[in-house]
Length: 103
Image (cartoon, rainbow, N blue to C red; front, side):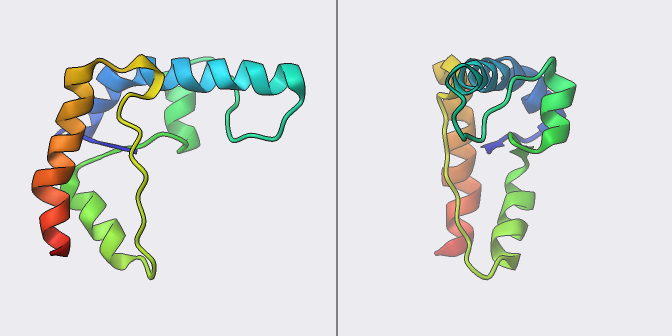
């Protein structure tokens, strides 16, 4: 899960790194016949439709967390070798717009 002011633009920027991660781990999983959440996919559209990786606005994420009986998040900002500044942009949105909704 990652955050962006514009989820479509965020997805476009982050998808190559999501793809790298899922395809690398998916290949290892298949090679060793292991149970894991990663599967090789052919492209960004297929990966996005799977829901395995999501890019949300901070407001939507806050709404999802508040509607959950047990809110939880796990951030993975450097997923698939994501550039540092792109990772920081997601983390800054979490810091500035998500955390204050819970304090």
